[in-house]
Image 1: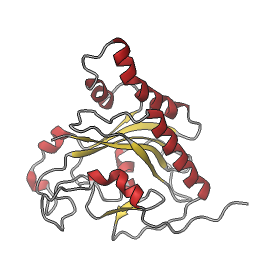
Image 2 (image 1 turned 90 degrees about the horizontal axis):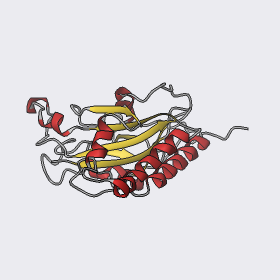
Image 3 (image 1 turned 30 degrees about the horizontal axis):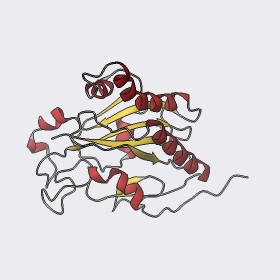
Image 4 (image 1 turned 180 degrees about the vertical axis):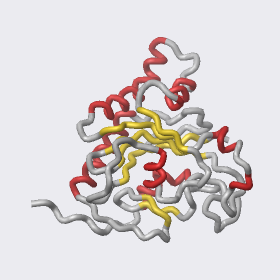
Amino acid sequence: MDSEPITHFDQDPQRLAVIGECIENYDVGKPGAKWPNNIISRTTVVYGSGVIADRDDPVVHDVDPAEWELCQRIAAEANAAISGADVGMGSESSDPFNEFYITANRGDSVPSLITEEFIREKFRGTLFPPVTITVEPLVEQGVWWSEVMADADGYVGEELESYLAPWRSMMSYFKDSPHLSGASFVRIGDLEALQDLDTKSYPDGTEINGCVLPRLAVGLTNQGSIAGIFGYSVQT
């Protein structure tokens, strides 16, 4: 017999803390603005399901308990696989990845691939509207991998292998997981693209573009949840 769906989740401070640095505006810009100096809206909340939403956005939950448990397990295992490695990727700060998931409702449509549109949908209008999103396969190529390798500039031999080991362990986890498909690396925000923005495109209250840029490695479950790891690269 199927378990009863979970139809209520409280807002979860621990889930919010995972993305919290991307919400922080460091007292820059209008206090009541959504994006005064940040990539994820100041009015963002996160539920125990991992669902991200604006605090005024009504959220309907209809979650299979087994799916929620699976998402939590995947996130924990993916985070363990990368072994606390710094996000880096040009960051001016030293910060690790953290467990991340957004559990789908029963009956949600399931895409064949993770796309920019799908990521925006999952963030439910909380992302800085002009921000760019790149989604690339979780393999050793592409823009995301070039940024990983840039941090290893000058490394050779055992030093290079040691640096790459947690990244490769994480990629192997996604590749080998029987519960995931479409494993992707998602870059939300690109420094050059943000600097090139016409300030006329800024939402009301934005003083400057945010500099704490989300970086995610995630895969899709059969029910359309995304799970994996979330970090950020600080670029000013």
